Amino acid sequence: MQLSSLLEKTGRKSQPQPLTNDLFGSDSQLIVPDPPGSNRVGSEAFRFIVSPRDISAAMRLNFEAERQFRQCVAEVLGKPCDAPLIRSRNATILPVGAVAYDEQRFGLSAKGGMGFISKPGVMTNEGLFFIPIDFCQFLLQFLTVASLFYETMMRFYGSYELSVETVISQAKLFPGSPALKNRLAGAELFEPPLETIRASTVVQIEVALHPISRSRLQDYLEAVLTEIGRSNGSVLNADFRTAMQAVVDEGVKRFNSVRAARST
Image 1 (cartoon, rainbow, N blue to C red):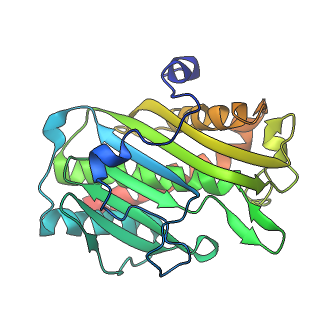
Image 2 (cartoon, rainbow, N blue to C red; image 1 turned 180 degrees about the horizontal axis):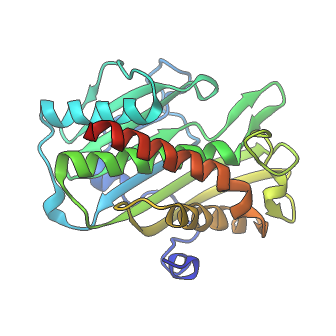
């Protein structure tokens, strides 16, 4: 799949609404609690929603579906995910600890969709910082969880719609170009470099999760960050794919490891 065809399908700058309410409902708790542990809904976040194109992918949110969902998340994250599930009529939400990001949440919809939500960055004594390499890593983890779950639980191998909703009133970026040894950097990922970023964007693209491949994942990351950059009057640096190669390789390696372990 070429990046140009992906970009033709992306949603432009708008209020982030499209798939969330349809798939999860306003009572689903696919939210960022702010402050952590409260019932107050944070106003800033990035949220990923993936939905199978085939309506037959709807499921019953029974015990087995929830068990497989939790197992897929734990295997991809490489840690126990033992927090109590948060259930509503049409969705099941799994909170996971995220250190500097406080708490993130994965969600499973009875309509067959899967979601993820997180704070949009890391808070420091200098304010909120957006870290592109973290954003990319979280998106890769989410797509890996989705691929494993749909293969294991639903035996669904068709196409999906991915919606990435980003709401950031203002966040700073650390100087430099991101790399595994310089994870915080991000300003020079864009041209011209961005010292701050603001976003109220929705990017929607068609994705294929079976099989997962390095080139596809890089295309998806590039499509999403291209729109975020453009909404701030900038474009991605030509070295984006090189800068993110190690992150993508790490994600694919993790996916292959988990999948291999399941087959033994």
